[in-house]
Image (cartoon, rainbow, N blue to C red; front, side):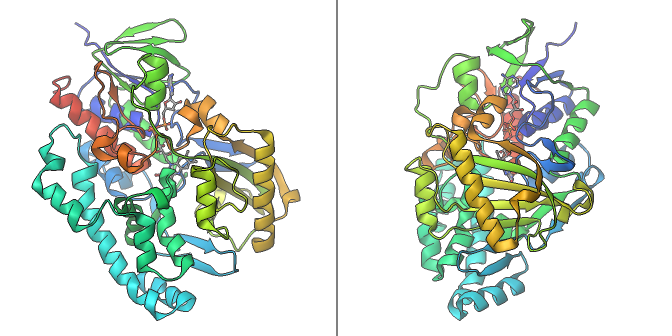
Length: 481
Ligand SMILES: Cc1cc2nc3c(=O)[nH]c(=O)nc-3n(C[C@H](O)[C@H](O)[C@H](O)COP(=O)(O)OP(=O)(O)OC[C@H]3O[C@@H](n4cnc5c(N)ncnc54)[C@H](O)[C@@H]3O)c2cc1C
């Protein structure tokens, strides 16, 4: 008798990693992706003659990547050629100061001392120590946890860790107490923006992201970050998983899936990798009664630039004059930031063939409000103009040299990837939507979830862990052996 398949809806990295894990355990897997290519937010883009990472461009926290390959009896280095990007990024400040962030402690100490003096330099090693301890305490307890056993997060040991590391204190305030220089405060707290969360609204536990950068470093896989999705898709295929693209799903129950084509598939279990609020509202038509909060969005530009910008490294962060004002505009006022902080990336620095000779593949990411503020073409023009002006002033950028341009706006994140409210980083990772408060990986109707809007959260390493947790949950429930 033919075994009923497990059907996974969505071919983002979360869906692909789960497909690979389950197929490796001998399950029959059908994965259905609505778009023409796999990878979801982590997909490749080509604009003009340049190649780009479609969304994520920072590979951090290697351990979940290595674990996935190891659990499948493989070695990451046999499938992906990765190297450390050092300096991690160049920070540009409004007063003209620059700092090259690096996991090299001696180089960081020298730069901190030059920028701000001995007091902040002396505080840096202690900060790093606290971040390392926080990271090693929080990941096993509050990240790799399905939260099905209350003792695993409410027992004396986990609660002791919360108190010892003061995990729930405000992140921005603690950094303010540690560093005197406002530029260093921004430098060590802005990382929560990777989750689409303001550091002024984030608990200290998210400083684990700062540790990932300064303790572990930032990595680059040849082929760009979409090469990760491709390698994981290949793992899944090699173990027999069927990965179908152009296969939009319009309805799900715990045991069946309906496609836009009219086809219906019976399933042993259904796992949605589509954004969880979208899955519940549109696919299973059982919206979460709980009112969910959303991350910010991002306006992303992919530019084929006919010229050279030698002052830009692979990764670059531009801070505006008033960080707090910038973030309050995005998160609390739904306003367009007047002097936005933004990120610029030229992956050609680590892989020359991503842009032709004499060109730069310039990727710009400008954090902005989600669709709580309706997106307009005027918003796009204003943000583009402001960022171009800053780049012209600081690194000699000339808008006339942009010979091809692609973009992703909050509206595009919604229409192309079904991200509710165009929130590029999924549901918010604020305290009351983190750890055991975050929507779990199975709902009351028996539908399973994997990806950024379920446990543990957003970011490539987290969605890989979410695939580990979904496989664990399916085993606990007796769906798989
Ligand atoms: C601009 C940007 C920058 C980022 N930068 C970083 C970074 O530097 N480092 C990092 O680690 N993370 C980063 N992230 C976060 C990271 O991209 C995500 O956490 C991760 O890619 C999410 O993977 P996922 O599998 O959960 O979801 P997705 O990648 O969103 O995949 C979900 C898939 O489901 C499909 N789908 C939806 N509806 C249906 C349907 N009805 N039928 C069939 N298929 C459907 C979608 O098309 C999509 O392919 C960034 C994100 C963005 C947007």
